Amino acid sequence: MENSNELFDIVKSVLGWIAGALLMIVLGVSGTAYSQLREDQNKLEERVLVLQKDSVTEDKLKDMESRINSNMAREVGLIRNEMSQTNMWLQRIIEESKNSRK
Image 1 (tube, helix red, strand yellow):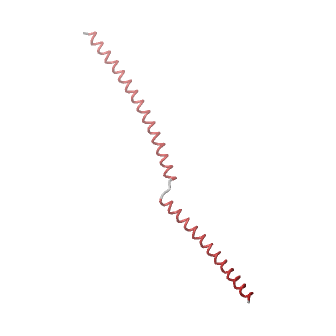
Image 2 (image 1 turned 135 degrees about the vertical axis):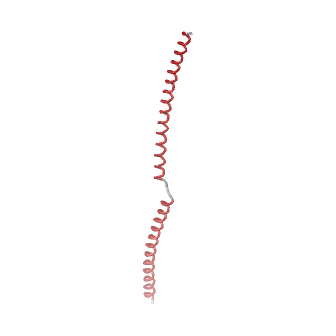
Image 3 (image 1 turned 60 degrees about the vertical axis):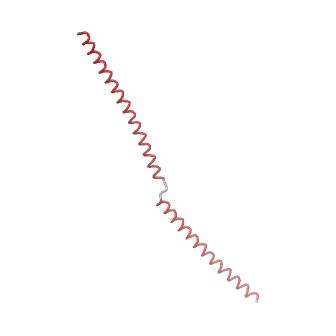
């Protein structure tokens, strides 16, 4: 009887050591997996921030449209002034031409 109790205690002790070792292995693997997932999550968050920083927002589009419109208005104004001056010179040339024919 004493041998079976000793054997039972030894088996119980060995199983306790094995369970402890397996628990340490599981904790080590899960810790490593968690840290890897955390690194991946950090990389994804960085990518999202870069995309948000570089993305085109509605406000950026409105600002660009406003700049384009103001540039176009300025260019049209310059062309209008040049055409006005050209028309004025053409009218003078036509008048001079008419006066020289008379």
